[in-house]
Length: 78
Image (cartoon, rainbow, N blue to C red; front, side, top):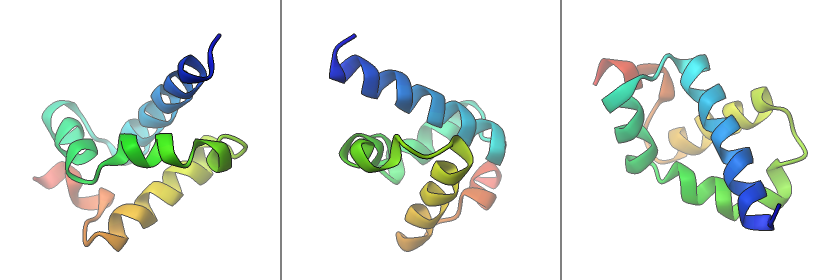
């Protein structure tokens, strides 16, 4: 498996964990990952974050979104 494939697989697992933890579904999920540029964040920080479990990474994503003025906790109410 290439490094890009490894990153994509890892990011998919993290996004699934985020979706489950915060109850993000369908359009709300797509809007959230696009609005807060979550996929580029995961790709750019893969080397650091890949060593942590999904709970830690999803908490880190929540902090990242909060720093941009958003909240994953209210994303389902959009």
